[in-house]
Image (cartoon, rainbow over all chains, first blue to last red; front, side):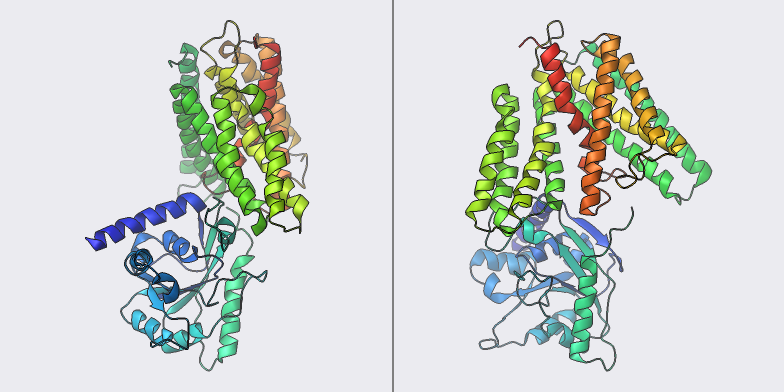
Length: 213
Length: 315
C-alpha cells in the first residue's frame, strides 16, 4: 500500500515538474538505455534531482537512485517518505564529524545491487556566479571502486531561475537537461586530474551550441 | 453558442487544404527520401502534422465560444511568456516580479478580457504592470542590469500577453449586422496571417533569391515576402464573405495584417538572433516554439482589433 502511494506520488511529482519546467531533454553523447551509470549533475536548486529523475524514461527512472543529504530528507516524516519511498534515495550524512557510514561505501553498496545513481559532486548547492563549484572527491573514489560503470555528465540549465534558493513559488520557465558522453577513470589517473576532467566534461555541456534541428 | 454557417464552409476549405498538403508531403517523402533521410522533407511533414493539431485546437476553441477562445489564448500566452522569459536577462532579485507576471498579470489580463472591461485591459499591462513590476524588483535591492531586466520582462508581457489577448477581445466587438458571428473575425485574422507565413515559406522555397535581412533571418527573401503577402491578401479578399468587409476592404485589411505579421516575424527573429537561439522553444514539432508560430498573429492582432473597433464597431 505504501509502495502504491509512493508510485502514484512519484508520477504526480514528475507530472508537476514537467508542467512547471517544460523540460527539454538532449541526449548528447549517450542514449537513454538501461545501462548501469552514475549520472553526475550540477547543483543549483533543491529541485535538481527531481528534474533529472523526471526526464529519465520510466524504466531508467525506476532503476536510478538519487544520492541525497540525510540532514535534508530525514527532517520530518513527509520528507522521509518522499526521500526513501518515492525517490528511493541513497541518503548520506554530509557531516564527517557525526557520520557512522562512509558515503562512498554506501554508494558502492547501492551500485552493487545493479542500480544507477544520480549524484551532485559539488556537494552543495551552487549559489555563486561561477558555473560550477570544485568537485568533492566522492566521484573519484566511486570511479575507482567500480571502474566499469559509466559516469555520465548531466547539465541542468535554468532550474535555478525557476526556483532560486530560498524561494517557494516556482516560476514556470523552460529548463534544459543535457546528458553528455560517459567518462571513466583512466589507469594511473590522479585524483586531481580526474576531477578536473570530470568538471570539464560537465562544463562543456553548459555552453554547447544548439544543434540544428 | 452555435457557430455561424460560414465557419463550417471555411473549416471544410481548410481541411481540403490540409489533406492536399499532407498528400504532397507524403508523396515527396515516398518519391525522394522514403527512408526519412531528408531533413527538409521530414521538417515539412512535421510542420503539416503540427498544423493538423493547431487547426483542430483552434476550431474546437472557436466552437466552444468565448470561454474556449479566452482559455485557449490565456494558455497560449502562458506558453509564449515562458519561452520569452526563459531567454531574457534576469536575476534572483526578479523572482517576485516574474512570479507576478505569470500568476497575477497574465490571469488578470484575460479576466479583464472575459468581463469585457475595455478601458482597463487596454492599459493594465502598459501602465499598471509597467509601474508595479519594477517596484517588486527594486524592493529586492539588486541593481546590476536593472533596466535591461525590467525592460525585457515588460516587453515579454506586452508581446506575449497584452498583444495576444487582443485575439479573444475580437469576440466582444459589437458590429451592427454582424451579431453572433465574431468568431469569424478570429478565423479571418488567423487564417490570413498564418497562410501568409506558409505562402512566404512556399514562395521563398520556390523562387527565393534575394534576402531581405540576412543578419536577421536567412529564410526571408523579397520573393517570399512579396509572393506570400500578395497571395495571402488575395485569399483574404476572397474570404470577404466571412467578415463585415466588402471584398476591397477585405483585401486592404488582409494586406495590413499580413504586413504586420511579416514585420512581427522579423522583429522576433532579431530578438532570437540577439539571444543566440534558432527557435523560441521545442514543443511544436517542425515549428519550434509557440512564439515561432504566434509572432505574426501577435503583431497583427492589436492593429486588426483597433481598425475594426474604430471603423466598424458600434461602441
